[in-house]
Image (cartoon, rainbow, N blue to C red; front, side, top):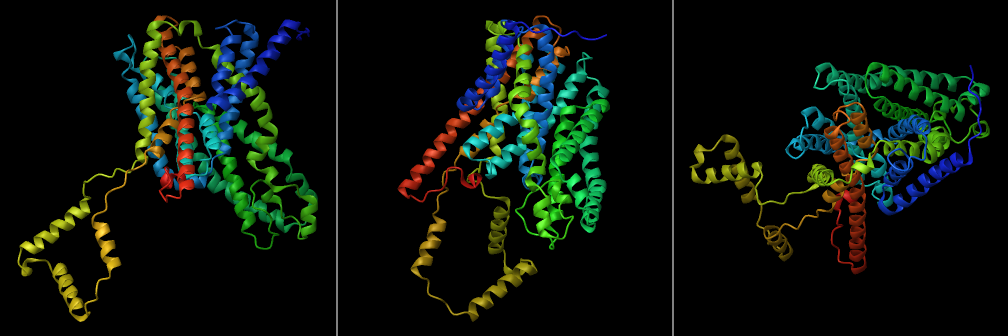
Length: 549
């Protein structure tokens, strides 16, 4: 049997052409205006798909859904490649607090859904909260790059917390997918994806530390010790790096799928593993003092670079080191297809599943707005960790110190403990042996200034920027809500289930649209304040304080 070839008619060609071109054009326009091009791509999917004009055939929409999922895997894989593990480790505690709040608050507030939506079970409220607990990585990185805050402390905390939220969101997608076969919570259904994900998060780093790291060192030393230019030319190539990266990605994704957890989580781990290996290769190369110093870069070539002792041979046989890193290979081979075809297909497939004609009924609109306000509040809470509360409350140590001093004055000196008495005696002897120094006017002014200092007002811009940037949900939220709807978690395809899905869709759409707009307006305001202070030379502090460094 074989599939016969048929030339497509001109109508089909025009529909597909307009679909692809408008996906990229609308994405560019929405990214420039609102920092959320995915909204435009989803809208094109609604218009061209079954919810709208239905210009695309059902077979074409099914193919776009399947190809679009490959785009989602590559999006998550890119997020793992972009992870700076050292920066993440240095801000791990604060980022973990922000991420934990951004996960628990939406899920907790989602259990208020039964108070204004009829017939919502706890399982359905949990699935809705899981869809709203993620943070759009694409929107976050776009905001940071366009605002110039990517390298700041605020940007590091924001990107790290967003990554953690998405990691948990990917695990949640596996849980929600498993709940689709059950109408109630089941221990095995919920625990299996969680423990498999934890096993992946623990086993993969252990394998990297105890197996891959020693093996890489041995191979590095073996290649350096042997004078084999031909072997080096075969290994240190972009094609070899591309094959190795594809094998790591495909292997971990397949293993996660068969083990029972989210394959998207495995894609993120694959990207982070390659990023870690690039750093290891850079460390090995920089630790060798005999090698010729070149611009610091990471990649597989850094593990196989030193095969010859002659510097001229290095220059002649080796390509650019930075061309073999994980992110460089991704940008050259995967990114063009991802940005122009695969990612638009994924967001369009989300639009295929949105029943747009049912979203504009009165009951759905007001419930969607109420749920949106709850979900915006749930993410704004994350900004509280960046607020320095200048309150008149005295710290506990200062209170205890004042209490000991007052008690020492009230009671006779023999009652005090030996340490305090010895300290006071030593102080008195020092005062007697040291001649009195005249107090200068500058010191008097300084001491009086310290005593009469009034706490300065604390800037709320860092907290507001962090909370607003966490509001945007994006691709993972749409994915989880679509999985919950198709799996029957939100109910059957009747009124209650469809209404809950539409309410969650309203919240995701509005949050994804409002977050970048608010952040963009605040960034413009901060930039204007910074330029104003520089032009006036007032010497005032930066509105972002230490978070803008």
